[in-house]
Image (tube, rainbow, N blue to C red; front, top):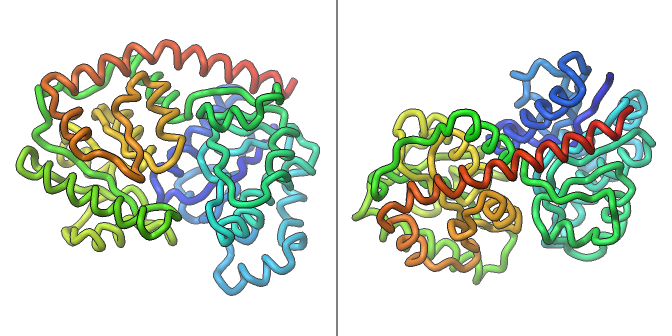
Length: 370
């Protein structure tokens, strides 16, 4: 069976790398280990550790000058991908929150990149599914994207707002993020959370630059982060971790903007070396990766996906809106006596329902290819 995974970004962003790993796991779980899987990626070399063949995403994987030329001749640029998809038995869109735009520039990039990959997949007439997604918000006209999603055999929305876009489309289903599903599986297997202290003595911060907000909102976001760090410092030891260092998404540069110049390790290494009591992450998959590793995580969300994930895990009080969050609420929540254990108990109690939703998703996926 030949299966092509679309929309992979870069393994240099550990969250995106995790979603590709989990997409492969879903495929192998449902169709066996002998499937031939090809990963279409914007940064294919970053996935060299995977045994599966890699295919450069049209335009997105090209060098800057060639990217412009490829964008001008967009249909010609996508011809090799079209030929690859025509030979597939199934197309799988990786999970994530990549189908969105907030400015004219982002809208153009979306239409030439992920939007065009979706369109190419639909036009191939090969069975196609999209793993748990956040869809939107969009800047300007996005009817073609919605039309193409609606034509897929199955789309899984990981938050209620994304699902509401397709209220009359019966092939769009609400399902938890793949990383949340992986967390539930691990928790139910061995409850592998670290032993909780009454209040956190060591806190790991996973920060990122603000998205395409206006200048006033960006300034407020940075101000709130600096205020939060100032309030945390007398109470706990603060360490910092980097989740993404890929082009255009380099967290290390943002740390320097905040005046944080100490050497930084990737999140996974930081967790292993410092064994923090708590992680506060602006990146959703930084939070979930921490949870999978056994560490409680508070999430400062900049998109709808974070609220959907934390709602699914039964801890919606542990997520705040990054655009304008109350630092006192963060402090009060995480330093409440027994808060860490209470958080873990809520997550554990939600995992059985998440497991049921995973089984439902698998049944739908298996039904696509007979």
